[in-house]
Length: 171
Picture 1 (cartoon, helix red, strand yellow):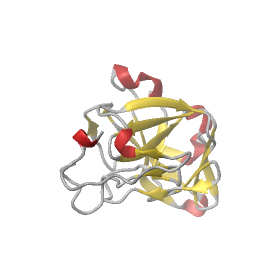
Picture 2 (spheres, helix red, strand yellow):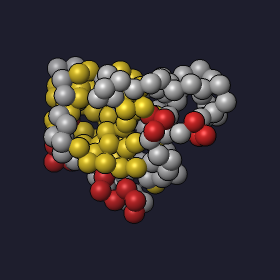
Picture 3 (cartoon, rainbow, N blue to C red):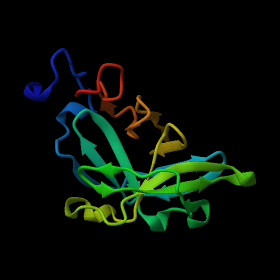
Picture 4 (spheres, helix red, strand yellow):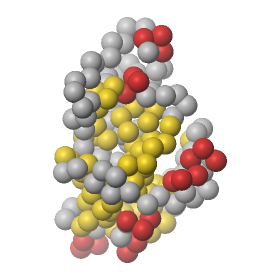
């Protein structure tokens, strides 16, 4: 995949059981997964699933989407804090995440209620950023993708470099 790499970018070599984000496609691909995801806001469990989806896109660690049935609906409320449009998935709907003792994380989750046909399987599923919440994949706490705009989950099974680091805006 070296032909797709930006000038001066050298991908890390994946080890056994690892994937390189430079082997992920563009446009992105959606995959179902039976891996165990848990999302927490403080001590409150917001989501717990073994039937999630991951979005794989060149240079990005996977972004995970949890079916609404696996999310504690009492911990969500529709947010008015922001709106965004994804060129691949469509218009995002944001959700405030409600923790214990009145804690609120504004726009802490998002969904695509009416996604583009390619991403129809994630209609209504929720995504969460490890920059704001504790996101676990098979018991491993995910690290946040740098840059503040992206919400990929960096775990030991993916290698980069990842979009979001300084100098990567044009990737």
